[in-house]
Length: 232
Image 1 (cartoon, one colour):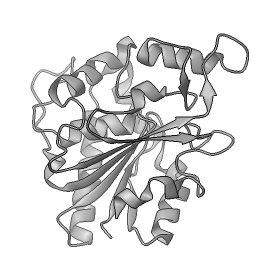
Image 2 (image 1 turned 90 degrees about the vertical axis):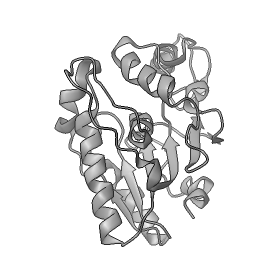
Image 3 (image 1 turned 135 degrees about the vertical axis):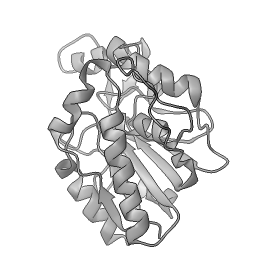
Image 4 (image 1 turned 90 degrees about the horizontal axis):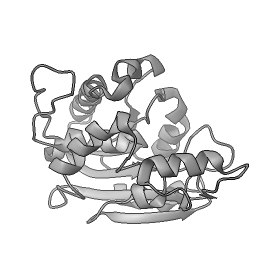
């Protein structure tokens, strides 16, 4: 089994992914979570570049490649971690809006075998995230490196967005993401935004977005078997 690296979602710390990490290890997948803390995300607020996160991701991947003496890893990106991982795969200089010089590209498509995105908003109408996501989708549309990397995009179908009590948050989040609030998703990311053209696109019934949400999420033991075979 190839080792697997987990990249947390926006403003999430690595500790939230420990149960997923441990469960994958029990299934014989050597797994490491990028050791992020919540404060590591603060420099990226307001639509600023994701460079600090990308650097930590790259450091972790390099350590795992060396530790397991392998040329490839699998990568799991939850929520924003999914589209950040798509930047990481790429070969174009990544220039943030506030940067004065391009950041070197990581070209990680060379050493990532499979990218699994869990509840990732691959599009957005929200102005603070548009620059980064436009960079991703303009330069690496769809499953851009699918001749070298297997893309698996997992969407949850648990909450229908409506302008009423109990589903208002979902409605607002879906509308900010894909422009339409009255649709299905995982409570944060609508299905329409979680899939990529050319990827293996999955829809999982009853799955919610966050590891902290009540009920089941993408990393729950009863859900993992739905997508874990792609890591083999």
